[in-house]
Image (cartoon, rainbow, N blue to C red):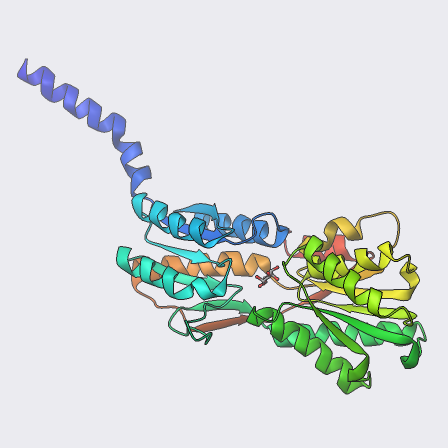
Length: 326
Ligand code: GLA
């Protein structure tokens, strides 16, 4: 009987061994504010890829608001995760996120949007991986300027619609970089009209664009500036609503992956193209950094800027996306 019991116990242990191994896999969270944006879906895909390469399990959770963010951290801790990468829905949640993570001993890396403290200052205590926002904004301004010259537009007939989200530092940097490079190229600052969007999506930017267009019926040609594809697309939709012909609009987005639908439309719109940074690198690199931090104690640098960017248009978007495996 005793022998039988031992044999059964050994058999049971063997049977459950693979399960035990699977449970030993390191778990890491990847939390994003707008899971509906292809940008963040791409980060998730590449976080999973890094997880597969490193032998870690990635727990992906959408965190559209503060409450869901804090609950997600509880969920991660309960499931035995060792840390997480996060793009917060509101950068002012930074201190609360950090406090909760610390209380569970979880490591945190911020991606895309930097945490700010109660005074609104950047929280350098949390490692950050972010696109080189000001430079990418400058590139947006340069490309708009080049295209308006190619079309032979006169400065006196042209204005820029600048859809802003100044409470988000990466957005403020992008739109101010864009305005600065336009200004340096010779575009009058007085013809750049700023309008804030209430939400960082197409409907919010559409409302903002509509209110601006209503104030400037005299403008013949429009350049559209915004912090990402959806903001710029909202501006384009506003011009269409006001029956401004697409040939009188030049809009260039940022994110690239969120512009694929628009660029694959058979009809040409005022949306010329998008600056594609590296959502793949954001997803992969942050996950790898977090893994190395958790398993080897390698603390990531306080700030990692992701710089490479390419302009995708109707002509080249398929090849450019394929080059990055997107
Ligand atoms: C912000 C924007 C996103 C994307 C990322 C890129 O989070 O909301 O759309 O542009 O930055 O870092």
